[in-house]
Amino acid sequence: MTEHNIATREQWLDARLELLKAEKELTRLNDDLARRRRELPWVRVDEPYVFDTEDGEASLVDLFRDRPQLLVYHFMYGPDWDEGCPSCSAVADGFDETHLHLQNHDVAFTAVSRAPLEKLLAYRERMGWSFNWVSTVGSDFHRDLGFLYTEEELKPFLEGEIDPTVKQMAELSGTDVAGYVTEGPGLSAYALSDGTVYRTYVTTSRGLEPAMAYYGLLDRTPRGRHEEGEREHWLRRHDEYESATR
Image (spheres, rainbow, N blue to C red):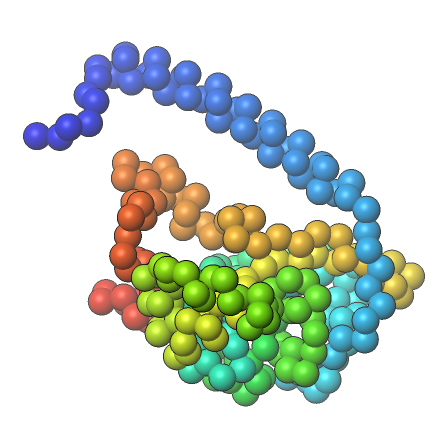
């Protein structure tokens, strides 16, 4: 028999309405945070970043594709990795549907990784994706935004106890732990005004959750994310689940 609290429908409704007050307050707080993000000062981007694309070399301005705004997802895929990060791959499963709506609201979207372009395109084909994906090989783009770490910076982490899920993700990506944590996921936003690019926002870690629709849905299930104390992360690439269908 379940150990969870059981109530009558009337008791459940009372509890649900009480929770709804907190949910509405969170909505108001999120709206306020969105306003404060828009009010952040902009930083001019003068670095001559170069990207490898399907159409040849491109600048950061080129990635706007004649739109005034740009969102960049920093996808963890190191130059020597066999495959892209499984977690980033799960996030990317929603990009094809999302970027169509973004581009029709004056926002260009692209994923960016340090792996060579041919690796990215082959992996994209395997995953069945079509969103724009470019390579930053030879570029400081990730480093400048805090999504690439040096061996010296990682030394304290690597000398400590490594979480087993980190080891798992490294193995699934075809690299070692040091190679895996060298990379970091992230989202950065840009504005293009009078030919000048401005960086307007950067986030990582749980700041990426708006792109992880599955977590928002799991948060509304009886067991939630159910990740506490896990020794092996449950996420896989969509073609690696036992019942994989696309």
